[in-house]
Amino acid sequence: MSGLMRGTPSSLTARLSSSRDIFQASLLPIRTAWINAPSADQRRADSLQTELDSLRTEMHRQEELKAFDDYAADLQKEMPSHVPADYVRAKFEALAHNQAIAMAWDLRNVDRNAAKVELQKVQAALFHLQRNPTADPARLAELNAYGERLNIAVQSHAILRKATLGILTDARKLQPPIDEQATALHNDVAAAVRYASTTKVPEEGMPDFANMDDRTFAEWTRKNVK
Image 1 (cartoon, rainbow, N blue to C red):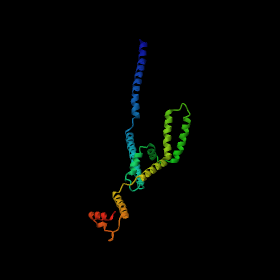
Image 2: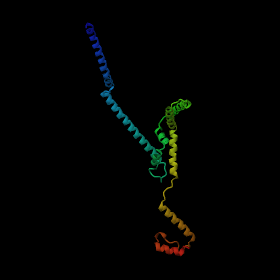
Image 3: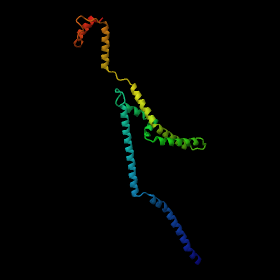
Image 4: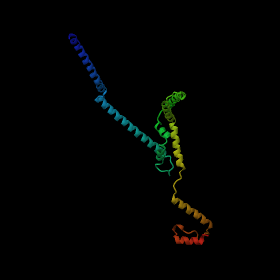
């Protein structure tokens, strides 16, 4: 009996300790979440950072639109006078579907010398990876895509220059619209030249065609044009 009584406190203590450990363990995720939860200041800072990033994105978009408008306007000034006022903009908007030209525009301000150095590093890495049978295909694809962007960055000015010259060349091939008034005048002059070669000049001299009515002109033609 005395032995049983002596063992009871120890057994009870063990059970209480075990229960306490279980309870504390159950509180661990709650404590961790509470400790890791962002403070009110952190949430405000994150919100401000998000707004700032959005503002920067919008500012960059506006700057790119202005740069495009200025570039198109400058090129439009070099177009023949009979070309529509929105000719260059329409041509560039059509070229926006060309991935290389669109990327060249986006990368036109990249330091080409730095891009060339980086491209050489990527090409060296690809050279070794392509000869490795265990190379990660995803890594190869990633390097190929990166190398393509670097190559376009290096060639961006040449790509844009070629596109610009193409627009200018196409514009110069366009024929001006037909001027009906000028065509009519040309036909009248040609007819007058033909009549002059077959017309006898009357003794009283050439009549005043400018003030001659249709009936008088027809009569004069009947008599004098053979």
